[in-house]
Length: 367
Image 1 (cartoon, rainbow, N blue to C red):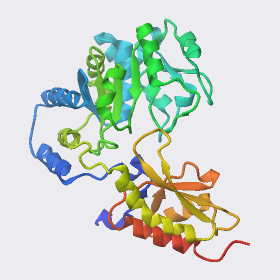
Image 2 (cartoon, helix red, strand yellow):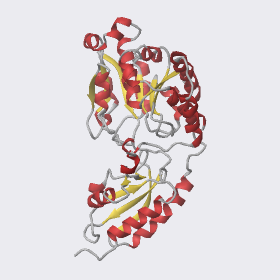
Image 3 (cartoon, rainbow, N blue to C red):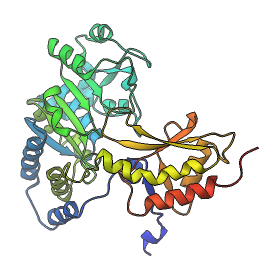
Image 4 (tube, rainbow, N blue to C red):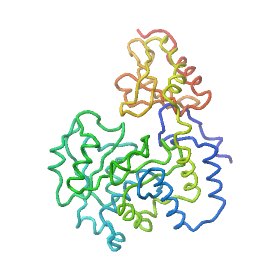
């Protein structure tokens, strides 16, 4: 039986989301994956050489390819705990509680991005030490949290995090330099991937989000921290390895990075079709910028539940339940609006979205 016949192809107007397979792959990326899959290599050599190639793209001293940004975070922290002690590497979770193993993390950065970031820290044998509050943090609070148990500071560069009343990356970096404290950045979905190497000791990226490669992750940064993480490959890293086809696909995506990225003008042009939705009862549309400062423009759809047939939450669910599931960016549905991201839309998707929204919201005004 062909399992593909049972699958529903979804329309992704949400963004590069793991639950929808993140990104579509270019022909060149899939061709390179085919090349990798059709040949044999000494994997240790492939990992080492590909890591050097990745580091060159990112302007860092070294790098390693993992199966996800989450895995990169875990391996980075595991390496920071054990350093180059082979016994500690092999017995990570026995040793970790008896050596420095606290990771400083601002409370507003202790997010769930599809999985709790605290879980990735725990997998490495470490423990999160939260700093500040959900609505803010300041530098004195961070400085007071540093103790002899502190092994690193984890800074999450993400739209998921609290953006206001938080220290900047530069402020945190300067404090870490003052205390000789390693700084790890989770930049999983960030653009400008070659800009982070000088701002931290270690940085984790998703290979399949902004880079638009196959499902994978990157850990990049300075020595000896990358070498420490590499020592875990035969141990906890065994569950985080990638195949040879993924390595070739990711390198192709890095080589092409930025060449096919939609400009803000192209994004705005793609979104114009949604402006007609403002004629529906209780609906208004507007162009919005990414709250975390990334070069993304989205169409925001405001729903007035007193006039529209459905409120924003009901609309989100109805869109997912159609013959062709449509996923929107629904983080603020409880506030009465959803966003449409133009970047993952395939040819014809925008038309289907407009037709479906007219179907769901185009009848008489609510009374």
